[in-house]
Length: 473
Image (cartoon, rainbow, N blue to C red; front, side, top):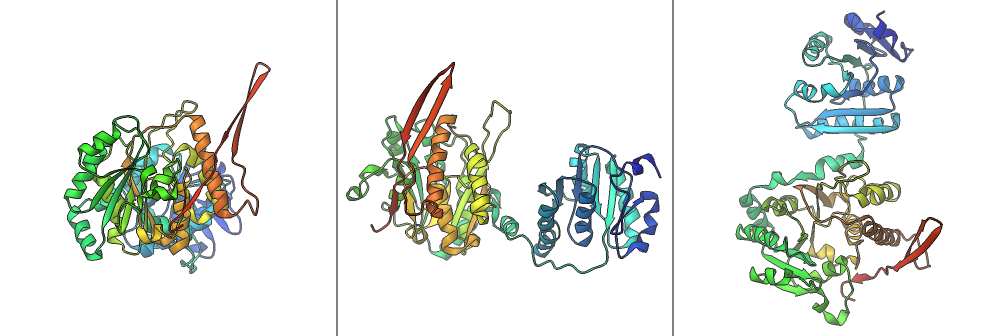
């Protein structure tokens, strides 16, 4: 036994047999057990490259038995949906029960060897499921050795049938309801789908002092309108004091102050209020809201958001997500999901609403929805509107009637920590209301901050009242 074999965390047991790669021809003798042939154990980062099936499932058992707590798994996207089901059920679902932390990455390289060339330098050991045919194992090992210098372990599981019908429902939704804007880059196709559906589409642009960016957003939307994919572009302003309104009017689009829309219903401050009032200024079948502070917007942004709803009639709600380059001084990290999403919304969702855990950016404000769905919702006037709409969209017609779309990189203004704290407070009030956590008592609406320095302290308090809007009342 080589020194690297001796370093293996375990030398095998009744369920798992560990063999030196030189014994690769002995695998047929262990058909009732898990067998792993390996170059030996090497300390350092470890990953698995798996397709799915019984051998891939057995790789997880070997890694877990070896004491690996954090599993890094790579998977080449399958072109056949049934094969993705195999991966979800045989790898994704059990991985979460075997390891403390699981990181699964879907890749699009042409071959497994291209994938290994890309990731191999980051890992000292790679695990693979062995081919089903014994005659293919040694040739595969030799091909892997040509592109990877670290330790290789090939695992074969016992001969058995596996039920592949129990895949993780959330991951299945992610695979089938997550789109790329580039998938919908042909306006002629979207225009034809729109004609077949017989729908009218309005783009709603909420604004508040966005003179630096609003003009380019409108110009881009007008390009999409010229292609026949959208019908109306409407700006809903919240009392801007700069040139936002003048710029919008110069492009010839309708401009409304949300405080002046259906004035008999009163008016409140907040993004949710502007979105609520939008339904009163258009008769469109599909309403889509796009922020006016985006610096890097392109026509693909609109095509991507609307594309899934036009090509998949069963989809009634579409939410955009994007890369948001935000510099975090303490760590240097870029949190693409948004700081409030990662610190507040995602932990909450996974605890209380796990059916929504497949959403990459649940708080993203770029959304599109069918009018009849919107009119059945109650809308909070504040920052919780995005979460409220998402929760209700899923409640109305199931998770599968909703989707998410990667709209690329978006650069826009970011709030400081105090502003994020106030946003998070409003969001958590909305989520608690939707879950009914308050019972018969009203939720507290005062956000207090206590500061202390050099023996002195002060208290700041700010009131945030959540107002819920209902159509027809």
